[in-house]
Length: 537
Image (cartoon, rainbow, N blue to C red; front, side, top):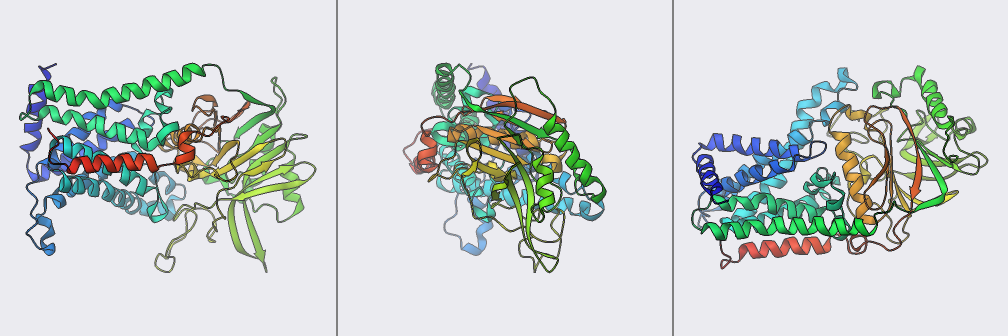
């Protein structure tokens, strides 16, 4: 193993011998390469060189100059380190979120011009989080182990803040790189995806210590081995948890689901002359015979009903044909209040429909997508939202456990409402399953739908609740409360998926009870350790 040290030392020397411009290019390329660890590629090992290079770059930015006035902030080491972190973040988010551009190509003649502004603008803003992590870490800890611990604690704090500030966008949290490995997923039941993010970023950055000649080789290897040993323990504990529950999850015996993925192209979805054929396709797929036990509940995706729903009895009776006898149809549909022939209020909704009673319950999406479902600061941005119609959607009241005839109560999550850790179920009225209705057709054949599906798996493990996911196209599926995939479709597939509803875990998971507080406390503790000058390495 010691033969590896000269190579790492030489690599560090090579990185630090570059000009300032090339260093920024290296930071950008490191961030972009780190995105290869995200779904659907999951090339996790690439995180090690990516984060090691970043750590070396932010170590070697000069000394903190506390004697300088604020107006000369550019001379501070934390500012220089922050610039390196920003370039890393720009590469990471640009490579991980390129698929945003696909949504502007649905109506290319109107919106294609916005692609460079939207994609680069969004990623540049998100990169500020990583820039602040790098700058602040360098401010409190100059190098070595202290810097890595401070960096890891700040990284997780920034991920958490990214889910809160400016409406929140906790997409591609670093812990999601472990989505394919069910044993690793189990840690989310204790500390959520943020715990895995914390372990991952520290493990990826720790081998940077191998390039430091100031420490003995044996000491370097011992320190570097610690976070990898912790990851191994997390994997082993997860394997043990799954080993104890190696049997398939218990199912709700009275419920048999049919998930309908119609695979309707987004450019065709709202064409007036095609709307009837879309409904006919959904009905035909819902009513097709199967050999397995009879369907009790049919589920259609987000805005599957291509017209304002519920304004007349005819629209309700039309879609109610898909509701099985004694069961229900659950579908996404736009709802509105109309006054004097004009839409007054518009919601992106989920409705539960039965054959004999019509609409029996509903839910309105409350976490709306900026510029997709509404235009923030509309007086400043004189543009339309990119979804159909000029009227902005109105947010609903928030999380609810919705009753469903013949099935346990459900927590609906429309579109990206499923990406918010610890904010997917009403804690006062715990549901028995999670339902994510989405329309990933906006993002074509890209990594976006895979990332969305991976995030949904984490919510199931975190809450100890099964997750049912139904997409117009994307990846639909049934996920048990351990994150195991019971049934799933493929991206771009026209499919009707039949399967059982897994039972929820009898007791809430630790994470469902305590949320993010313990992980954030651990992150803060690591940040404090980074400030401790007696910390070695």
